Length: 116
Image (cartoon, rainbow, N blue to C red; front, side):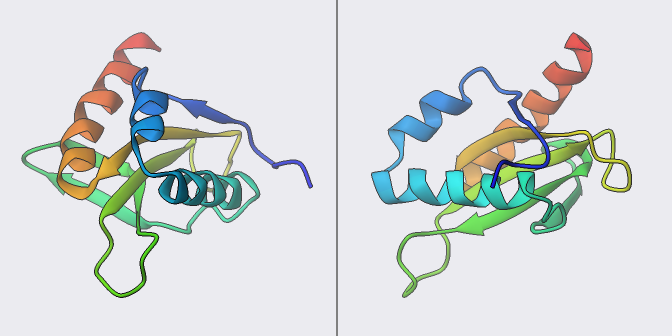
């Protein structure tokens, strides 16, 4: 079934970060993005505000790993455009190891806002 909403990659390095991940983790990212684009818009937890990243209130985060016997290693951050009540598309903000993904999300969102 085709996705309900197109996915746009906000961070120009998103695909490079994805390729750098283990193959199983890559598949999990694509599966999760497929669920979100398929209509499960609130799959992730709200990001909120952090001093390190700024305001990510309109973003959600998904923690995941390919091994179930440990806490999740990776984080995928996305947002729904223009909002979850009136979705048109999904923006994949960033992906990677948890601390790295959080730090990158703030700058990726800021860059996307400046570009629009």
